[in-house]
Length: 76
Image (cartoon, rainbow, N blue to C red):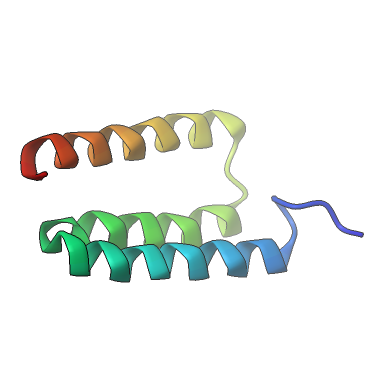
């Protein structure tokens, strides 16, 4: 059995599908959030294929979380 994460295609496709579904739901619930969730979807699709370093992922993920928190504070 292959481990989840880095080199597992099924995990990557599942992550992209999850982020696509989240983008659709977010756009329906709070249309302003559609662009942000599209960025999350793009990150899920592109970042793993580039072989990012742990440091890069460590900087990107909190940035995405902060952007989502800011959006919710402003518009929700």
